[in-house]
Structures are given as C-alpha cells and as structure tokens.
Image (cartoon, rainbow, N blue to C red; front, top):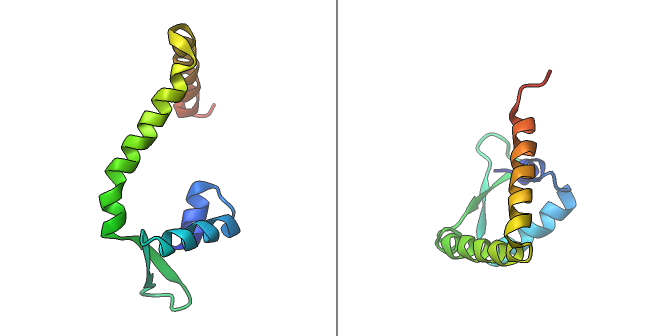
Length: 96
C-alpha cells in the first residue's frame, strides 16, 4: 500500500502515519518498493521479519485485552457485550 492509503484506512493524519512508517522501516518491519505506474511514489510492503513477529504480537494484544476486561467483572461484561452487539447491529443495518 501507499502511505496515503494507509493513512486513509486508519483515519490517521498523513504526518502521524509518516512517523509510524519511518519507525517501522527502521525496525525492519516494512520496505519501500517503487510504484509500478507512478514514479513519484513508493509502496510499502511488510517484511518476512514482520510476518514472523505477527503471531506473537497478536497474542500479546489479546492477552492485554483480556487483562483490561477482567476489571469489569462478569455482570459488566454482559452489559458491555449486549451494548456492543446492539451498536454493531445498528452499524450493519441498511440506512433508512
């Protein structure tokens, strides 16, 4: 993807996206490749290093989410689950 596409997909500012991309490039998680049709821009691609680290990162995020949600307790989790389910249903229903 192009950095501008990433910024749009994340609803992030281009400047903030640029800073994050620079850090990911420096850490070896992304590489720049020339755009095939637009010589003024480059595309970003994840590296094998990034793809190798993804399962552990996903596990760490999941563990963190579980720990954060433990603070709510079972009854509050039920209320949250119901509220989020109704919110999602509303977002997925066709606009009237």
